[in-house]
Amino acid sequence: METSQRGFAWLLILIVLGLVVIGGGAYFVMRQNAQTQTLAYQPQTNTPAQTFVATSTEGAFLAKCPSATPVVDGKGNSSGARESTGHVWVDPYQYWQPAKNNDFLQINDCGAEIDADPATFIALDQYYSKDAKHVWIIQNPSEEGALRSALISGADPSTFTLIPDPHSGDPEGVSDKYTKDMNHVYAYGQLINGAEVKTFTIDDPLATTSMKTYSFPCLVDAHDAHNKYYRGAVVSNTYCHGV
Image 1 (cartoon, rainbow, N blue to C red):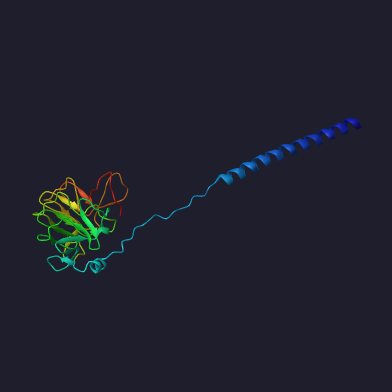
Image 2: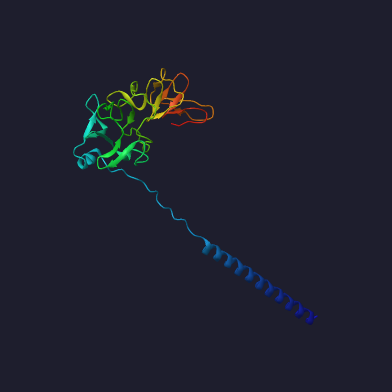
């Protein structure tokens, strides 16, 4: 009896030792895996986005180009253009690509030269201008980034005009966003496809409309007989800028 009890005791001891060995091995493997994962992990570094800050002002350009004079509109307000020795200049930092292309003939200390005729070039207000052949957006009326182009492609200078805006804070009472000619309406100098000139009207900037695909009201800043618009885009079941 005593011998069988001793044998049973040794068996228990062996079982306990086996569990300790197995448990220790499992712990070692888990620890090694954890260390491996920790060593393999490379924390991501958030690199700040490169932001271009335009520091050039009209005063700075005029200081570098003393022969340039600001172009004024019919009410004597300074526009975004300057004239110098038979050339017309604008601030290149207003545009996406301040480089020589169809808009700019050259860029130097006077600014970016546009292909405008100084003899017929006039400023309609601080943002828009035209000569005998072309219409230009010469200063950025938007607070949402640079302009795409200085030239308002396809615009008819003989009929191009500003649109009255009774809600505008502009002392001249016109929209700085929307313009038109005989056949087209433009937003920030870009054609609004399908907009009807005869019925196009500027709305209160806080006006809204409802679209069935959105649970919130959609902002509207203009309309015609067929559509409602916000910043030149048609407000629809697929486009809504919420309040």
